[in-house]
Image 1 (cartoon, rainbow, N blue to C red):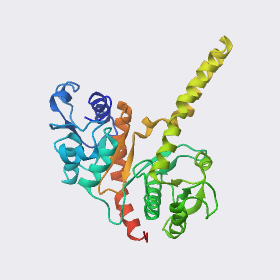
Image 2 (image 1 turned 30 degrees about the vertical axis):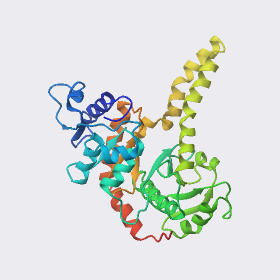
Image 3 (image 1 turned 45 degrees about the vertical axis):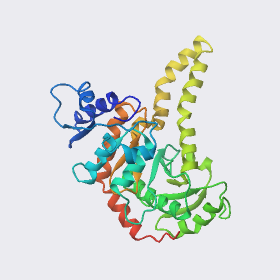
Length: 326
């Protein structure tokens, strides 16, 4: 029931998912059953189950309201289904803060994880780069940054099939002594962690692909993410202005249009669907509030892929072998 276009876009995404040849699992839709049936064909396709819930967490509801006053919401009940083993993964385009808080509360944290984190892929000259934390933790301790690095390294290695991914600490300079107190304190801890740490990286290094994983606090990471998301619309706007200059420019623009679409595909959030909340004892995928059906479908497949590749088990093993003092 979460998201700007729920439940229509969510249901359309689920229908695309279960009709795909890639789908070898069932999907449980949690929400107001009467509203869901308005958008579902009759009979309901095989592979879809319904869980009726009385409440919905709104996009403007506080975390406290979601946790204490809406325990019959689709979000709360669906996460309980995962905790109880009825389902194996959770996907939502709803209130991001509520998803993070409820996932942590209901599923719990993996051993050794102080703060769950979200990571998101950005394109670079050398392939996708994982930015972590992308907004879950505004304030972070040095030990949190180390754990983000470990979880991000595992996720990149397992999901992107990239052995020993390089990990960089986002900073204002390459020197070890640069940055604020948290960054300076995190540097030697990251160097000692069981990851391929290459030192500090600067903002310009993200799109160069200098590191496979870029670690930062959620305040910085979310600013970087939102800035990156503004780039494709700017490129399209500039392209249209170029095309409007003359009839000849329109012809050139038409010839280049397909190339442009291919260029910005790596920036399209729909391709990845959503971002994983790493560090919780389960699978929780968070999507954009404006998620399209395509994005919803890809979020579901991302959750299944995390299960198939045993991401959490690998993170648990990595955390067990790590020493991350506060």
